[in-house]
Amino acid sequence: MGLSNQSVPKGHQTPLKSEEAIRSAVKNLVEEVHVVDVHTHLFPPNHGKLMLWGIDELLTYHYLVAEYFITAPATITPEKFFALEKQAQADLVWDSLFIQRSPISEACRGVITTLTELGLGELVERRDLDGVRKWFAKQTPEGYVDKVFELAKIKYVLTTNIPFEKKETVHWYPKTKEFDTNRFHTGLRVDQLLTGNWESIKEALDEMGIEHTIEGVKKLLEKWITIIKPKYFMAAVPPTLEFPSDEEMSTYAPSTINSATLLRRVLLPLAEQHHLPIAFKFDSVRPINPALREGGDGVVTTKVSTLQKLCLNYPKVKFLATFLARVNQHELCVLANKFGNLHIYGCWWYCNNPSIVEEITRIRVELLGTAFTSQHSDARVLDQLIYKWKHSKAVIGGVLQDMYVKLFHAGWSLTREEIQRDVERLFGGAYEEFMEK
Ligand code: RAT
Ligand code: ZN
Image (cartoon, rainbow, N blue to C red; front, side, top):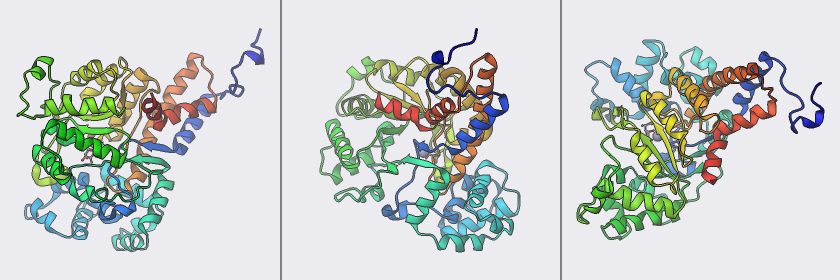
């Protein structure tokens, strides 16, 4: 006896009938989904020079600069390179990584995908860098934001706003410029607290006439919460930072303000009071080759247990987390499986390579289902949204096809609408649900 139509849940009347139909639906739904990009370094047009876009910025992205220096002649030192105009730097990168050899790395291929998606395939075919520059010269920042958001299918992005960087804060204080909050959501970046960079904290305190105390730092951040209305705090966790024990905290002397005290007396209490999650980034080490500037940072394996202690001891604080070391990904998934106040996001930086994205996504789906955010772009240059999302979607979509086909063979019928609901979760919905908890 078959099931009567009444026992079929609403919306489940037309399940997909074959493996091929499932694969094709997943592929299409992932390609078409509009994403929430939960971490970028982008700025809107009215923040002037902080908004990076165009071919010269793409070619001088720090991932490419680091790659260029593996090939550069000894006569071109990082010092000489960075003293050049941006266009001249871009020329060197283009010649070395795109002309002298094939642009086969992930960061190089990204430039090609971006230009192709922008419709510049013929110029790429002719290796016509000048032609590409001429095309970019005709774009306006505002029009280009529209174009990129549409091409990359972005709902909105989270930005990185550093209250200790004068070149950024001038856009907010004393007078706040309008921020396109439909497309750009702010994030308050506070690495300086965890690195104990007291010099730059002091400068920011002085700028607002606040006293140099723990309470003063709290006041400072509260002011910035009011000014930029962030969705979360964000900080990269230095590899040396260990979660301080109660004993260490009780013996702290007010005269020694260090990262442990700033974490436990400023950041965590503020997060709780203002219901602001903290987005942590673990496993980066800065820098391992300072001459390369932003491209000089490395990866190190830190203890996932630092995050476990935070989740356990601060149940009222919500944590978002991403790890850079490949070996930590499995342990991180197990942790996220145990704590409702933890949400994993993205495959970060050196993990944002197809082989690693694929591996990480498989582990995450197997352990967490759809309760994580599959990717963030970390774009610094607006145009990068195009390739970072296209490349990631291709890999994540492939993994999801396999997962749904396995489920289908296990005996679970699926509709297009059900798959769409899950895909939307993985590309931003799960983040939004976590934020609303
Ligand atoms: O991926 C990157 O661009 C890195 O340089 C870092 O900025 C990293 O994403 C971070 O936010 O710390
Ligand atoms: Zn970043």
